[in-house]
Image (cartoon, rainbow, N blue to C red):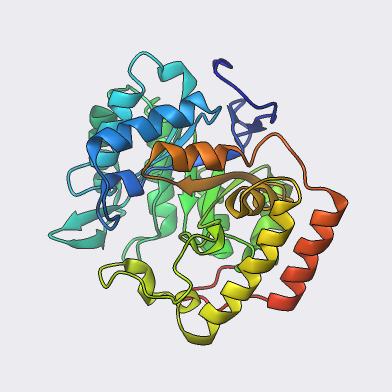
Length: 330
């Protein structure tokens, strides 16, 4: 994997046991699809993807369902034209749109068809990582694992992962198809996977890619203080954006701002830096729809907090405690 265009000195990290290396900050490519993201457009999305590569981010995370017609994958294909060797592409199968609703279907035939369509959209003959997007209640996870194992054997993906699975499901999957990576929510306020999943992954050489490091912008310190989000904003449904949880989070972010200011970093950079340096975390998935957003996030790499910053972060975490969530993973 090419090492050009790396403005920071942050070492890349092993992707499972594949021999591939990924940046500890990844670009999450859901926002550029424009499904729930207000104001996303083609020009900005392409600029965001190119800015990620220019900033030393080589890990691009997408999915078959990112866009009603694969917009995310199609944009990636255009952005990496002439730069394919600079990108580690991860995509996912097993979830698709029917109308405006997402539906699960992780049957082997569906996973194969979606993989092949994703490759066409991406303009490549293989991806570096293919995930089961989410376990399908109607399909045994072992059956889905077998399908992805076959796709790996055929060279359509170099490695396999599983997303949104319980530890028990991951173990069942891994017994059929060795996992290179798992993807789960994890951030300063949602740390349930520290109990069981992170230790298991570390013991088995499985990378952990976490999404929602900034809890959809909450921990970036840029949301309205009065909590009045656009009525169309999908974040309104999350407990952390409601009532007393919201008030607690405003106070928590204010304390993080104090810590970030000591080194001239933004709150988002401080939070992502903390997250990517937690034991067992390989790569932090950070969504963006503008180039300046991913440029800012890339500034989480290449430095370490001072002792005083660490003390302030620890105090803020202890005072805040863990937050309520719609679903907990352990």
